Length: 212
Image (cartoon, rainbow, N blue to C red; front, side):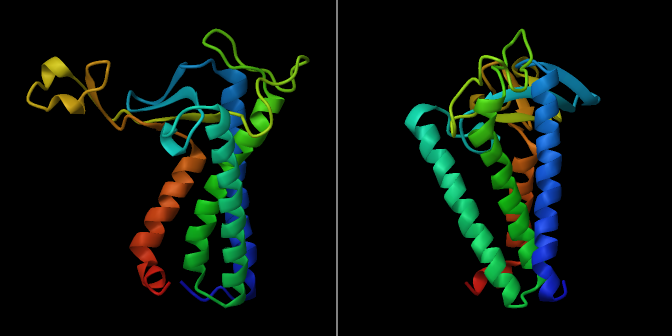
């Protein structure tokens, strides 16, 4: 890609804005229209919206609440501040926009999940298996600042095979439900942005990474 020049920072913020907008629109819609574990088929049986919430990292890793949730939320905030500083400084060095693009995707993804952690516990009521959440409930939100749960909904069970139909596979391939599912993790648009950003940097900006 061409050198970013004076417009690199503006394009980086535009990328972050678009990612955040799409991420939050989808999350808010899911919170206000779906109950926990509700499924909505999108494309056949291999792409669904499946609403879950998690306390941890991308794709539901590192569960748990309390102090660990607070530490994770604060870590995310610090990481985003550091990434924003790096993007601003690199833009002043007239670096290739490809580098800024990858960093912008990662930063926007992290920011998307920070918004959930910081604000969702305050502005939404509890999502349950029977009832959808409400926005700005009269009794207040379901959790305090920095303790909101991250909303996940993108589910791609492209391959779903019962154990009795694939007995030749080792047992660790099968989940508690007795099925081998690829891809089992449920994630959100912010997680996807982080993942795409990381792979993009490794595959296409490795020369810049190597120079660090």
